[in-house]
Image (cartoon, rainbow, N blue to C red):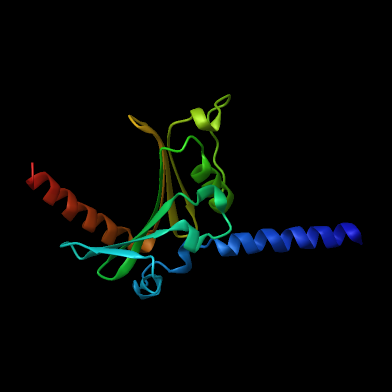
Length: 172
């Protein structure tokens, strides 16, 4: 009986932590209103009908201390959520990889390679969501990126990125 209570308690605790860190509490396709309610949200509009709203993870994932130095960027195009990005730079750990694997499913690294020493990218699907994890080595240190998009809004995301890239090329 004691063991059953322990199992239930552990399940309850882990499910609360998982619920407390729901990056998609704003659904893909939703408007930005829900995010703008946070006082700490920083909205940035651009001339391509895009709006990026940056928010610290401490407001979305208050119980996850490992990724508290990570920023979350929500990209809205035509006032619809199309992309969620997490960026973690210059930390000598794999906290974002650990988070991605525990939340959205693990992936295999090359045999004999330690997580901190692996650099590369991996994509996978969870339902309609597409995950892209990148671990890169920059001149200033390691950087991790996790992007979450949705199949239903990929065309809108690609069109937006195409407009931005076209403008950037015109500035050269």
